[in-house]
Image (cartoon, rainbow, N blue to C red):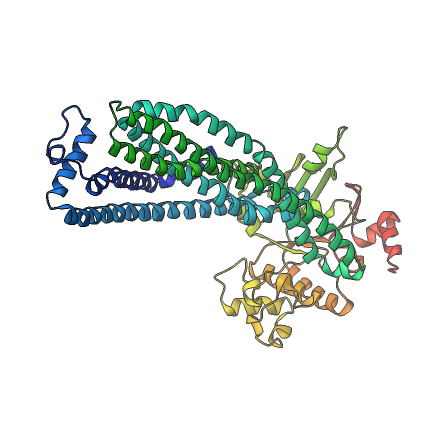
Length: 609
């Protein structure tokens, strides 16, 4: 509930207006029901004496109804029925007008609240550390945007709307019933605990089962997302039947659980309807005996109005029970949304952090160690860091290459320079300033990243190159493409720079995607470059073109190059060999050859002379 109230706070004024409109709609409904007493008198008129003289002992309500009847009947029974019908039509019209405007107000609030929550979820996605996505299914995250938000709107917000309207109606109707007859109303009140007990018994397990339902729905979304991404692998390994069987099993479990949940939700309405009708029958029996015995406090006409008023209470009572059941069902998705929004974000910049204006001297890494948070949480013994006591200096304008076997920590070290993770111990300095004393945004603006797994957005080539510089001109984009050896192949495409690249860039080859990625890095004019195995997945021709683009881009810039193909980094100013998270060798190509150590072993494995 606090989650909903927090997001509803900006719309307090609209909620107040909605509440007032609901109250007015209920009051006009009550006025319509009370007018039934006059209608009964017009159809079955008493003697004239009783018509003109209201009872002195009657309640204020009875006197008002009596005066209204006297005024109407003075026009004659036929005209009175016409006038009375017009009054009823006006009352119904006012009731529906207020009801319509109340729905307009609450629909605006609900739509804006869902929009705000969706915006908060997307903002959270951007602010979460990358390690979160390594330990959680992407399909589960997508399910929160799709299923959970929809379920929250329908079950929680929709139920709160029903709940408020039902409570207001029940309170006003109950107050009027007590005003008409306290004794009869106490009789009705004694029957409510029985109704509440039965309804609560039906919805007792809804919250737990709904939570399981949301988790299964997220798992189905994850299976669907994995199937789409890995469809080529599924077909290559003829695993169509296996994938289909796995999905159908999960879908069957989801369908069975959803059937149970819906059965419980749907059961509350007919049960409450049956119990409400039982109460109506009890009122007819008990109230009729009061009227027949001539007990004071209620007249036949008011008893008819009492019955009408109580019948009007049945729909909001049913809505109340249904809303409670739906809220229990929607509590599961609310908990999931809260859980996701409560995830720890990437630590913000220090209050006194200063902007990074570009590298002038060197990057220094001192005694750096790092272990992924997930590994720290999963291990009961001393965690095994990915990097251990790394000490490295990268001078301004130098090209430093990182080599080593897979899993040695090369990419992790590059991620730490980009502030994607926080070191477990040690520190990184840019021109003698600790990395945590610099603003993250300004630091990343001066670093260009080209990775092995190039990602392109499902947009045009022009927009992909200009992604980091949305205000770049076509001339600047073209110049960046020329530098990246991409301009010629772009012009050969059907729409040139306005050619769509497809989902993830699938309409382009690997070499073309990589050169677009390099052009994107060139356009930002970074003074520090990070190449994470940028040519390892390319064929010889594409590698040559990409390498030429890299050589042009490296000129006069500080670069950290991660490479498996050692032929591409022989001219580097410094080559650092990593093994099991430690630096085992460092030097130039010739110096490392003279050592005849691990670097030389890697060269021999690749048959490089």
